[in-house]
Image 1: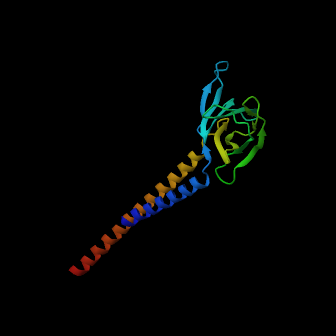
Image 2: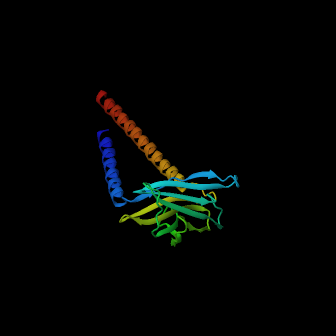
Image 3: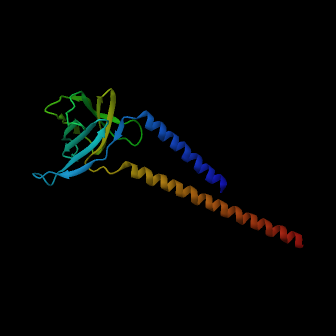
Length: 204
C-alpha cells in the first residue's frame, strides 16, 4: 500500500514539473475556449466567437459559419485593440490552421497567411476540406513579445477523438486492475491450500 502511494506521488510530481516547464516555454501561448452565438438574420447558423486578453491587448475573433461543413469557406475576422484606450493594433497578424491529429504531427491545412489591416479588422477565408477537428492559431508580436492564440474549430461533426483515447485508456486500466485482483486472489488460494497440506502432514 505504501509503495502504491509513493508511486502515485512520484507520478504527480513529474506531471507537475512537466506542467511548469510547459508553462514557462509557452509563456505567451493561450488556448482559447470557443463560444457559439446565433446571427439575427440567420438564426439557424451558429457564429463562432472568442475573446481573450494578451498582455495589454484584447483579441476578439469571430467565425461565420461557426461550424462549417467540409469543403465550405469560413469567414474569420480578428479584432485586436489596446485594453487601455481601445486603440486598434496595426501590426502583422498571421493565421495558421492545423488539422488536429490524435497521433503524429498535426497537418497544416492553411497558412501561415498574413492578413492586411482593414479598418481595425484582420480577415481570412479558409476552407476546411475534411470533417475533422482543427486548431486555428493567431500569431502577432506586440510590445516586443510574441503571442500565439489557439482556437479549437470543428468542420462537420467528427466527434471528440480524445474521448476514444480516454475510453481505451480506461478499459486498459480496468483490465490491469481486474487482472491484478485475480492474481492476488489466486495467490491467496494457493497459500491457503499449502497451509492446509502442511497442517494435514503435521497431523499425520
